[in-house]
Image 1 (cartoon, rainbow, N blue to C red):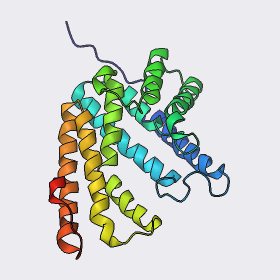
Image 2 (image 1 turned 135 degrees about the vertical axis):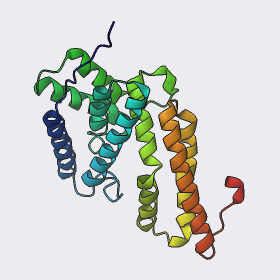
Image 3 (image 1 turned 135 degrees about the horizontal axis):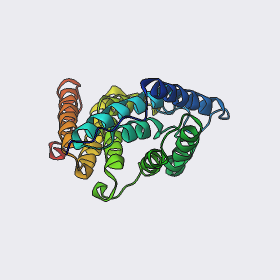
Image 4 (image 1 turned 180 degrees about the vertical axis):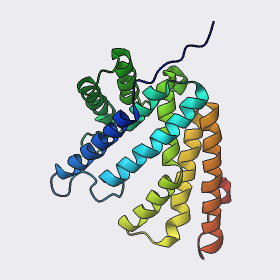
Length: 229
């Protein structure tokens, strides 16, 4: 018996249209806020950063899904919509809100299988789940692992350094801030289940540790507690 070849329900043109929709939705979310809206002054509360994060998560999630044998189309569409409501909904409600946006879009654009739409929306609604990842569908796990990975890579490090300026900190605090990324990464590593995500997270942790050590060595007066390692 041969292996069944499953045709992708998402064409390249359809995925590009989804990306344009998500980008536009994020821009509209910012425009619809009142003056000085929720966390407006933080660098990650911007449509540009949020869309960049989403694209990073799409790339990472597809990488993990391909390695783990997950449904890549479900994973990449869920990754694209996972933070679509991040700028308009409260943090603890944005996953469910994003699933509603994804369902409305998929129901009204094209003729996607109902089972496909359901899997995508389930992954979006559960991507903020804080429990053990082995309790979740494989596609949802791939999305969560990708989301965790982007927060401890270059994006996570640069955003915490930017945050120093918003909090009136100086470069003397840089090693401490990068240490927070390292701590976040170690917490994430404890949750990772897939082999591919585990490989990626260890690569990123090594880079973050190197950056913190570099800051410790070259910025006078910085003293990072060696016990943290």
